[in-house]
Length: 416
Ligand SMILES: *Cc1c(COP(=O)(O)O)cnc(C)c1O
Image (cartoon, rainbow, N blue to C red; front, side, top):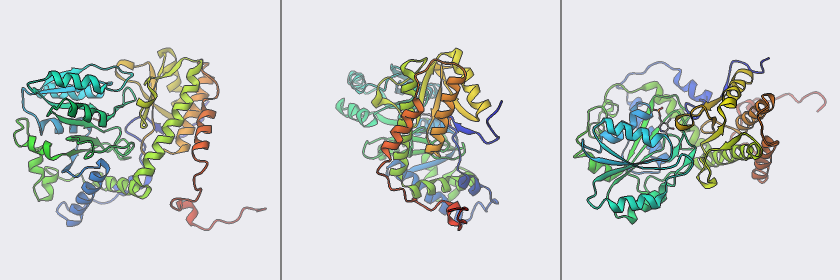
């Protein structure tokens, strides 16, 4: 028995679903690499990315995935034999640290818990103990996509200031850029790295690096610089230097469209939508967890991410539940990774997601819990609906922008 068709609802935490407008924007002929119009697209994307990062420093677009821009951030600011401090809150900062280690950088780790955010007081103590200022950079993720934990970057900045430590603050916002507030300038972040395929609703293939003046200063003496990643080369005037070679034209056309969609909706509205749909997800899971085999991985409510929810579920149920959702209902959930591998699943609620996507996903999961007799508290979806109904009770029901289907005159239905 199947209740699905070919188009799946993909709620993995990256890559995410791509709006048809963005797919359509890439379906066009190649243009001359040297055309002024193409150069203009690059400049407009850079300006809009700066606005998303809420930064005023130089920003770079790379033909790369997230791992690529991790390397881009490190190689532009550090030298072999220098030390970085990795703040653990799941999988991803550790992965970034692993990359640093292979570049010849010494890596220290502030140990963390997979269920909690980074503790800023512990960071402060650790930095105070580094009297010789051996630590050149602090590496942290805003949202750890493996644990579903959201770190408080402002508090981490404050901890570094309280310790009067000069280390660069480098933040991975790959799973949070556009989805939740981030303040490059206000939080004095030195390097932030993002990627296109998560909340930016684009294909994988583009990575972004935003910088501060202090990071640019570090770049002058960084021994790990290579031509491809190097900021100085990319600061050159010619368009080809911005990519150290051929501009990834079609990816750029797609990015231009996704940035247009975010601008049209408004960043505040985008983030509000993420907040409500994430909370609806958590309400449902919390009810299922009341008398069941499931639980939210992040134990502290204020540390739960609005872009991805990580759910623990015994392995003997998790695989069958994910298979049911995909094969019977056409909803693709994310697998758990790292320490939680096999033990549960993830719901990515970032990018091109609506109430229908999330309520549909939650409804399918609840159907699976019933069909597979997984012990669970009853009424999770109802709790999500109740929450969304209350949260939107005072919302204007006028369309923000006329939906395309409403643009045509529609015949009145018979009997109306
Ligand atoms: C997805 C992700 C990455 C890795 O990005 P890739 O494009 O797969 O290399 C890094 N950090 C975070 C927080 C992520 O969510």
